[in-house]
Image 1 (spheres, rainbow, N blue to C red):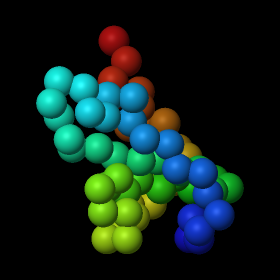
Image 2: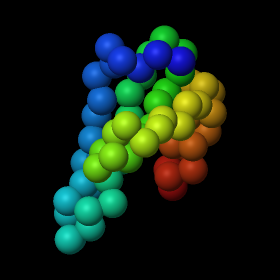
Image 3: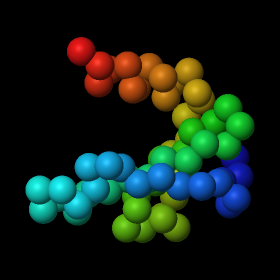
Image 4: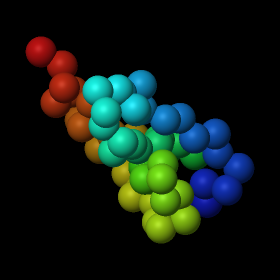
Length: 61
C-alpha cells in the first residue's frame, strides 16, 4: 500500500505527561497505516478499515 501522498495525523496524546512514544495514522483508500512519528521511515503497519474499527472499539467503554 502506498502512503506517500497520505496525510499523517499524530496522536493527540503525543508529548503529554513527558511521554515521547508517539504514533501517526494515515488513511489511503480502505487501508489504515500506523507508524512511529520519531522514525517515519522505519516502516508502516497496515490494517484494513475493518481491523482498525475493531481496534478503536476496544478503547470504548
